[in-house]
Amino acid sequence: MTIANVVSGSHGVAVYFNGGCTICVEYVETLEHALRSAGINTVKCDYYADPTVLTSLFSLREKLGVPPELYGFVT
Image (tube, rainbow, N blue to C red):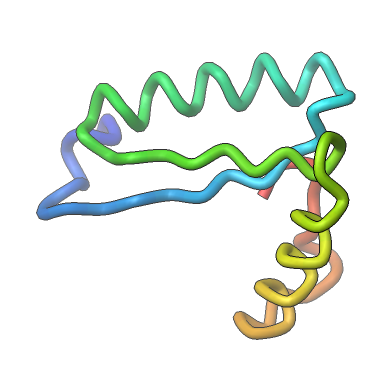
């Protein structure tokens, strides 16, 4: 199953990541390409370049009730 198989309608994705990590950047670029090719708009949120993004990520995790064991470098 591909991303395009499960997508219907209009969707958007915010990807939070550590831009200081070359592996994370490479992963996010690959993910962004896959999502865009499936018609999903993406917004990249680099908390390395902009520390206020990290505050936003913490608030989002709390709002959604994400357990700490599911936190990662790319969210």
